[in-house]
Image (tube, rainbow, N blue to C red):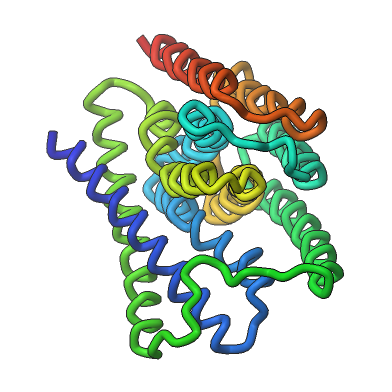
Length: 315
């Protein structure tokens, strides 16, 4: 019971600290004169994925790298099936008007690269550099597109931007994020590892399930709000951007900290489920289909089946 409370406490600290870091970093960047568009693509993307990044690094340092790998693969699967499925189930997402073809293709390419790296595992610093290089290529392309389109579009300041925010408040947000993230990551990883030992399951399974769903909560909250406001492009962009960052940056950085073994079960099953869950979105992205309630039921049901299979395999 204490381990469960500790893991929940660590997760709550991570989510609050990640939000504080985003708010502080966004306002600091804008005060320094960095365009809001660039801030959205970099600072906000990093801040919202900071919990997963800190968990991955802490897991490798603590000698439970399976938790890091399970968290990334589980989060990417949950991002598509749950983070899009739940809002579609209750509100529907008018995705037929969204244009995310290029970003979607980049996500699929990143997924295939990640799977290839896993088959050459364990993931070491050499593999990590390949993943980080892939992200550098994608970011360079996104910067080019963003800067070339700035004159033709009005870009809203990212969430958390407040030009009138006092300097002490910006500092307080930054300190809260920088102190809270490693604290929350340590609490969550230590207690998740203890739960796995007590339950007789691997840290990888805990990463695929408990930790993955927990760290997908910020994306779920963002997507629910986007669905309520009928901003389907924000919902899809949120999932695609998060999945890209998870695959290329989080495992890339964690791989520089220490080697990450790839379990045989991942090569046979979980990696392919992650890829299949992404490919499910082809009709939505290329054939301009709306994510209605039937889609929501199907996506959520598929996630329940996946989790059931993962847990039963451990019995």
